[in-house]
Image (cartoon, rainbow, N blue to C red):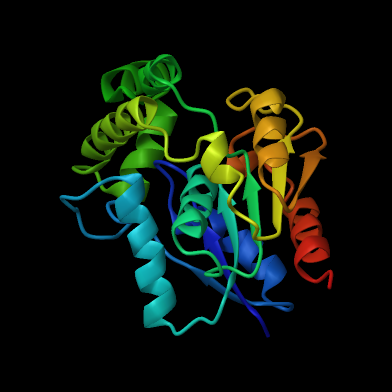
Length: 229
């Protein structure tokens, strides 16, 4: 079977993708891992999109994966496409879901407002508890601070401007949930248009959080694209 790598989003972990892995395992050799500093991985000094891209490349080399296919949710999609821009041919096909391709200082400032641990603890304590269980009771707040700093840096120096996307010729399926409130259809369509070998599809009645995605529907979209020769 062909190798397929599943990548989680910001402040997430591979555990959120295990149900999707189960759906896809009969058709692909499926791999998941935690980005550095996420889930049960060790705390890291280098916390950036570049460091996460290197983590993917290292994982591919370690497991001797030959041109794997890749699905990236949200940030995972951004990192995968960024890695493809650095190393053409590293992936056979790419799928992204709910990936925010457009970044500026203004956008980053808005996004980081949702990453304040004290506000999350006060207003959505259940989510704070989830993050503590996912990343460690002593580490989750640090993870949010590092993620905010990373997004502010990305706002100042986006890694995937149109000029970069236009040089990526890997077949790519760009997916967006119909009810995604974090990523606009316009910016997603713009990215899909810039990518020279891409398709753009909407997942009906789907919000941004990965837990709210219909796993069977997503798996069908992934299979249809990846198994189409």
